[in-house]
Amino acid sequence: MNFITELGQYMLENYAELLALTVEHILMVVYGIVLALVVGVPLGILAAKFEKAAPFILSLTNILQLVPSLAMLAILMIYFGLGFETMVIGLFFYSLLPIVRNTYVGIREVEEGITEAGIGVGMTSLQLLAKIQLPLSIPFLMAGLRVASVIAVSVACIGPYIGAGGLGKEIISGISLQSDLKIYAGAIPAVLLAVIADFILGKVENKTKERTT
Image 1: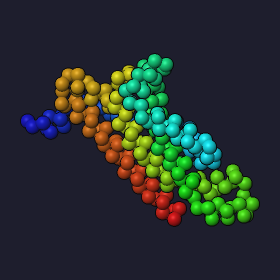
Image 2: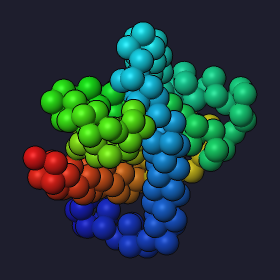
Image 3: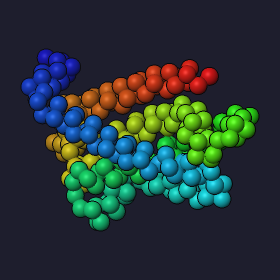
Image 4: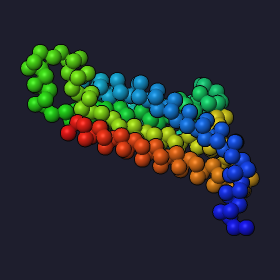
């Protein structure tokens, strides 16, 4: 029996557990990304509207991205304890940079002529933002969301080190037991999640580009 057959048999036998870990992995990623959108989009808008604030906001999110993932989670664990919620906070921090930066760039890239036309018809700053600048910056935001999602899927794999679940639980168990089967059984679904997220969000990004051109 070759390795691929053994792996297929192992994944079939442990299908229910792997599915539960996959769902938990997806939930961690989704919650982290949603939090990053809720905080990151306003920060990106703030950076675009107030140039003096932009270097501080972008530098802060850059610093968060540069902190090694295990170090970040270790620090968060001190303050928030072990578990699912701490991993979500970590994914939130790691997802901020691409969302903030792309929101900022998207708003800044709106053609000046379009903005002036809006001002010319009597739009307020808030109306310009809601009706012109944000809609036209959506392709940039989708690109940032696409990057953030792939990063979050990969970072979530180290969640078990701080008591979170997800597919990393199977990978780390495989490392501890020196079991190639367990490592691949966790790694393959994680890779597929990243590929699927990138593919779907890439399609959405292209659609938004078509609508705004």
